[in-house]
Every structure is written in structure tokens, then in C-alpha cells.
Image (tube, rainbow, N blue to C red; front, side):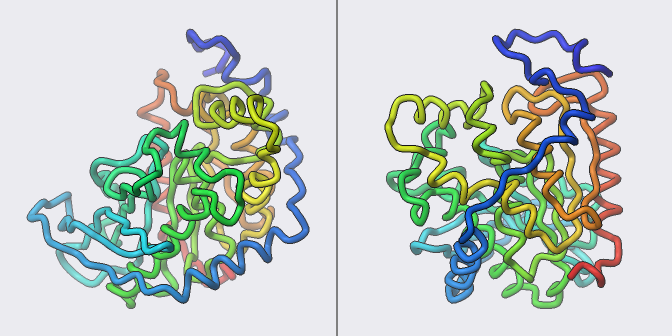
Length: 327
């Protein structure tokens, strides 16, 4: 379906006047000179921490999985809560860590196509099962927390939460080492792209309608997502948020990926502008990237269920592919 056929009540065009050809022509931003060093240093520090995972059976069963409550420690001694889904029979063949959108998470998703995987659903700091005093769970305030300081900015802590989630997963199931995939939608997709280039324990990446792409461009585009809160903040304060956001640009990070990446990007999205999504995809080294185009994101539309079905099949196939040449 052409996105021009969508009826909506937004005061702006969620397709931003661009078609697929134009989106694929978006030139990704250039990262700061010390971008890689900034993230490599942060990852090295995260690896010195003990996640100390604790799991408690809930008695709940989801398909082939038994659901466990999970707690582990992240940077700043923040306790991260979530769920761990463990196959009820056999040893897991792979590990999967799945990030959530900016609405948070109240329960694990149905692990479609992941019967042989142990699956971790963390709640990033400040959201869901991971409340932190002083950090709002409201996306419009969460995204601004400590934005004046790139070393303390909340998104960096959320990347730590993902890395320590991998540590927790491998501590509990060392047999999946070398077969850990990172999946994420929207907010979780952006965090996944920021985290994956530096973590050699992650072998595959899938993101759907990922945010935090091409931050300088994102600041010029109206939306109904967290980007609008950042736009408003920039307009009201003298501080140039790009001094921090350049280090939290998923398109900057994407150019450093060295693992296969499957990106599902939308042509029409009122919450995460498609130009940012495609900037992320365009920045991934060409031999590693695979694209699945969605008609829309963060929006109900005819054909949504069918496109999600196709995407689920693609993700299952992607995770099962041999990744011995990933690095």
C-alpha cells in the first residue's frame, strides 16, 4: 500500500515527503573522532562488573518456554528487572536478548520462532521492572535525563543494561556463548544498535523501526515520539544537545557493526521518523545488512498483521543462519 493512502490526524506528514528511493539515498552522519573510543571505553568498564543474576520460576508457561523472573545488576549498581524464558526441554542452542519500546514492558512477548533459544527480556533502567529514583518512566522526561553530560546520559546507562544482560545470560547459560542475538524495536532497536558494535559476544542484530538515527536530522523533524521532547528541549535551552547526541546516534554506531544485521524500517512512522531509521540501515556496512520494508511503524494499517507475520518468519530464518563468518 502507498503510504499516501493512509488517513491520519497528525499535523505533519509521517512519511516526511519521502519515498523508498529517497530514504535509501540518505547520507548517514559522520561520527565524532573519538566516537569509537568513547564506546569501547564504556564497554570495557561494563565488562568489569558482576551482573549477579538471580532467577525465580513463576510457574507460567509460554509455548515451549518456562517463564522466570529475573534480576541482575548494571552500572551504577542499578538493579535491572525482567524475565528469562528457558526452553522446557533440551539445552538451548542460542541466546536472545530483546529490548522494548519506549512504552516500557509489563510482560515478556510470546517467543515466536524461538523454541530452542533462552530469551531474556530486560526492562531498561527507569522503566517497567527497573525503577530508579530520579529517573522518570515517562519517555518525554526519560530521554532528557542527564542529557547535558554525555558520560552520565541515561541512554548510556541503558546500553550498559543491555551489555550486563548479555553477561547475565552467559553466566546462567555459558553454552550459548558465540550464539547470542540482540533484538529490539523502536527504543530497544536504537539501544541495540548503539550496543552491538562493541560487544564481541553479540553475533547477530535485528532491529525494527529503530530510533536515535541521524540525531541532527531528527531534531528538524516533528514527531509524536521522544524525539519531540528533545526538539522542544533544544528550542528552550542554550545547551546544544548535539554535543551529547552525536555520541548517542545509532547511525553513527551502525557504521562500526561487524555482524549480520536485519533491519525492518518503515516508510511512514509518526513516532520515529523514517529518515532516521533508514540512516541507520544505510550506515551499516553493505555486506552485513539486510532490509525488510514496512508500510508503517507505530501506526495501525491494513496489512500490518501480514507484514508482521512475514517479519517473524524472516527473523526466525535470520537467527538460524550460520554466523561463523560474522566477525
